[in-house]
Image 1 (cartoon, rainbow, N blue to C red):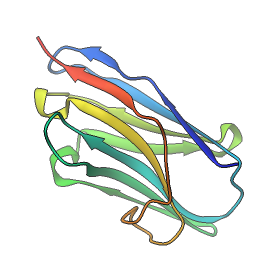
Image 2 (cartoon, rainbow, N blue to C red):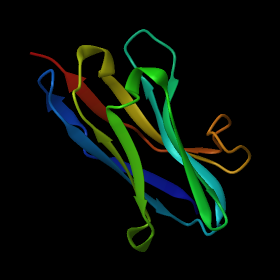
Image 3 (cartoon, rainbow, N blue to C red):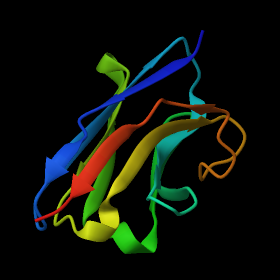
Image 4 (tube, one colour):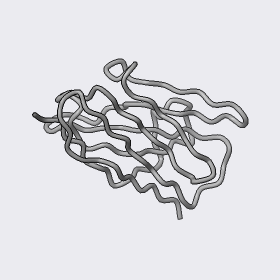
Length: 123
């Protein structure tokens, strides 16, 4: 059974950093997209970042608000995807979800979602 389990959320001051982790289990394929969505209070979920694996190659995508500040990466040996977040600001506050998309290269149509991990940026 496919599972996505996030961790690493927390409270941080503006300008601070956090690294989110997503452990993937029950999934074996070299063709997929995995990434992160977030949902701020009172707002719709939005895509944050995506890592596409197409056989032996990978590519990454970032939403404009996080470009240059967030970095997505993976450790295949640990079946884990990371989201390194730096220079955080209040607009980054929200519930962050790990997603897996087996149908598109940019995480547009996630098939699976984690339970979410809360990120709060506040002074």
